[in-house]
Length: 114
Length: 112
Image (tube, rainbow over all chains, first blue to last red; front, top):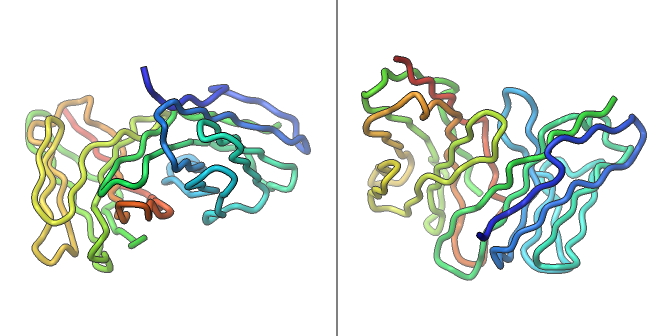
């Protein structure tokens, strides 16, 4: 079955450590997105990418980095510069080049920094 | 992407229609209205989208005003499983997938 997979579902890290969240899709989608969600709040855009080897900052990119070396993969690194990294992280993908299209979301990674 | 405004919360009785409003007064001519919902601690799920005509699928109906400045998502017979946060976003189609900015959404609580 086609879909978008985030791993792991839960992640614990010590303060000051970098951590990388995985996002893989086999939907042949061009665009991929990373969102952050804090308790009781909506989704805030961290980074997005429309094609391989290109990505753009979203609204809250500081303290995060991404890469897009393959169409299927869009890993997010939460660096030690991110002051409050504990959150629920969601990855999404969608295809482009069509008149309209919906985004597919992964099931999220809950990151806790202690 | 145009900004949207939704009420923070709504209640609905089980079996009744749930009507969720969304304002998008700055929507551009090429922007679609999309609705998603998120059940606690899961990824958002696509519900429906439209450009200017009303749309219906197996999950819901979408009513877009003639001036396209607002829309309403209708769940015709709400069940307890429809309790979720509902997000309305506007986004251009085709190659301009845009930033796909989400707001805080509407928390719908369906009560028995």
